[in-house]
Length: 85
Length: 253
Image (tube, rainbow over all chains, first blue to last red; front, side):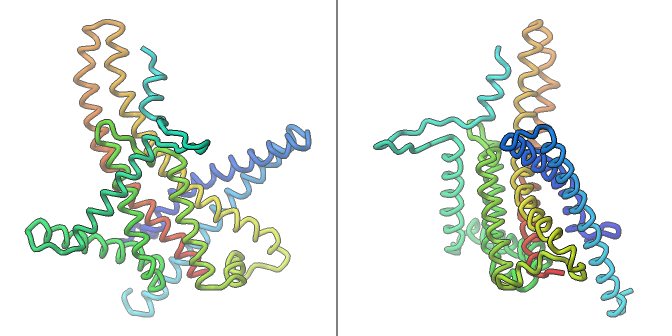
């Protein structure tokens, strides 16, 4: 079942992206906090970890959107070749 | 009335385990539920597989065939392709296990095992293991590692993208565990909070408590129905996401 330009799987992955972003951020802050405790560099580790977590979360969103666009283009091409559209 | 204690008692696991020769055997409400669900599924599905000639037996056999076809045609084959066919038993087991654990929580005095992060983490680790196995099985060690780098990536970006991709996969597995845990836990917290409304309002005035009874129970009934839906939905989501992730590892870009 196609829901707009996206498939059911795409929709599910989109709903997962928010949670992935949050988990990336939390992991980044946790790693930064851990590094700060080891090195005594508070708050720079937390700040760097938060930035890294943010970057990772954003990267996941960009990659997912690129993948969905590519899949959609492939599907349209296949449908065009088959004469379904 | 200690509201926090009541909510904690409703949500948290209770350990009445025993110590045998210095070795702690933790028998908890969640482990008992897990074993009960496993036994019910094991014996129930075995009974169905015997193919009884009775009307109920035939009905259950048809239902189980439809169920397997639903998992195969709705999740495994579209996301993993023909390569996923051999993993069909895992997905059938996973769906039923998550579903029955959630449904068991709706029975009075039985806890929802999937509202424990350790249980969902173990389930997510199994799925993570499957994803890893698929990658290694179909691409080999080097091919699996190569699959982490998107095609067309400039060479100088590879050292940056590779750890990001590995972390992304780990986060996906973490998200599987957290999503199921959070949904199950929050549903049960809402249920107990709605019931507590009656007693909290009743402490102010007994008539107010009696007045709050009907609306609270109506909401409770609605939320219980919603929990029933959530049980099916989360089992579906967990299984579908596992098949999508495993499929993305098999069919790398």
